[in-house]
Image 1 (tube, helix red, strand yellow):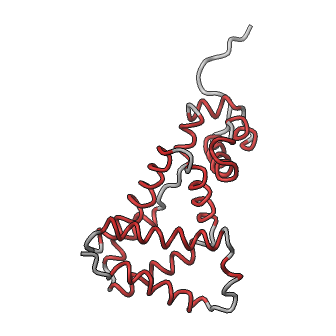
Image 2 (cartoon, rainbow, N blue to C red):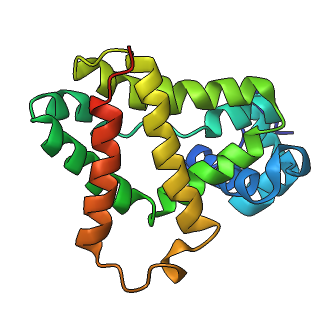
Image 3 (cartoon, rainbow, N blue to C red):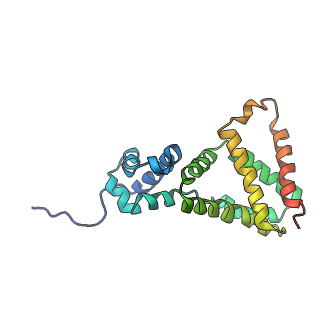
Length: 198
């Protein structure tokens, strides 16, 4: 008779990432309450016990699904600080216009919707988005009231993402060239960077 050994459940070396990817997409699609571990496991093609083995619970899996700043985002503050304000604003604007049409924007908005019913999840998402992505840029630039400016920048980014993803703003400005969009957004970001908040 063969005795099963306790320990790691059956699964390939990338099962954990597959579970995480499935969780992100399902939480974004259905929200926290309506997403189950069984649904996540089914989409990932694994047994539900494997999801629990890796993450412990649905709540911990949701926490692990929160978006993390990319290496590019973490390196951006020091790079931007070396530029004149106008150039820094233009660089930020260019990155925003790139990101709002990428899968990254859909993922962030989806996780925001999923997190909205869970105060602790909202706090975690706020820490990632404002505390780890926006605030370091404002601090590195040596600006007054960096936290307030970080929030204003987050409003611009999430607003643009929402307009592109939910309202398809391209229907409203089909003839507005990309350079014109960039110029308008750059002026908005410049206000965030230069307006006296004292």
